[in-house]
Amino acid sequence: MSRLAYVNGRFLRQAEAGVSIEDRGYQLGDGVYEVWAVMDGKLADAEGHFARLERSLGEISIPMPMSRAALTVALRETVRRNRVRYGIVYLQVTRGVARRDHAFPGVAVAPTVVITARSGDAAAAEARAAVGVSVITRPDDRWARCDIKTVNLLPNVLAKQAAKGEGAFEAWLVDKDGLVTEGASSNAWIVDANGVLRTRDTGANILRGVTRLSLIDVAREAGYTVEERPFTVAEAKAAREAFLTGAGALVMPIVRIDDSPVANGHPGEVATALRSAYIRRAVESAI
Ligand code: PDD
Image 1 (cartoon, helix red, strand yellow):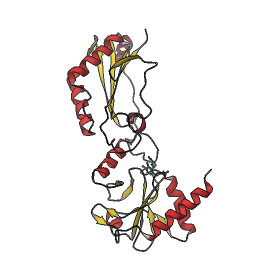
Image 2 (tube, rainbow, N blue to C red):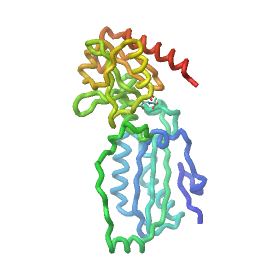
Image 3 (tube, rainbow, N blue to C red):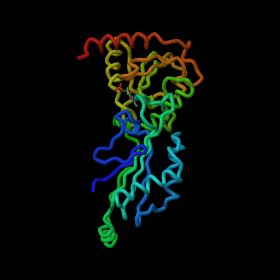
Image 4 (cartoon, helix red, strand yellow):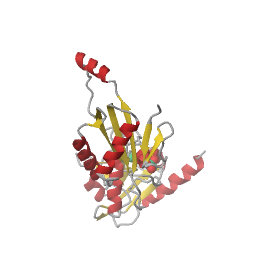
């Protein structure tokens, strides 16, 4: 018997079922999921899982794709069609399909709903429970690995959306010490009071921006002093200039941080010159 998946209201053979490559779950990890244990063909702890699903969706502003009653029918039907008596049923809800952009889609899109069910081996589980299992210990670095260019971008999505909501281009992320780490999808820079270009050092807490690295080179060649040293929000607000870098925005002057204009509120000379220099070099070396 081939396994069947529920995809947006239809049951499809699981091997052939799919969602768009522009689905925000696939592109940005912009979705939530829930897993119910199936016991005797029924959903265990159903209320608790529905409550957490609604909470998770609410926390990231995705509407419930359908009522609990309708979802229960779809979950049960997936379990029934896959003849699961003992196992799990998996539900994934994403924000839906839209052209890739960190911020939420401008026009409302329907959430994507996928449900699968699979049987477990009850006897094997009981046998395992009879002897017990082992664990190892690991540092809890969920998600402290911002150096990995993962598609697990939900925090970035939420930050970018907050920026958009306030009419801003980007959100700068600030760590527990009040230091700027980076932008939601770019690296952060200032020209400080001494005329020194500063951008955060690269630990596990920022993405090693390729544009950032090239620009360090371009800036040093142009005679600027560059320090890979963090700065506070207050330093950024008091800076001579601020700008951001990334493959999307290249080198982009920043003229306002929260409610404070940066210097005279116009793009700075250094950022503007570096933008031209970076683009010139990038065009020449592009393959
Ligand atoms: N973002 N930091 C984050 C979190 C990023 O997502 C990006 C790039 C950068 C800049 O890296 P680079 O200079 O290598 O592009 C820094 C891309 C452009 C994006 O997600 O669209």
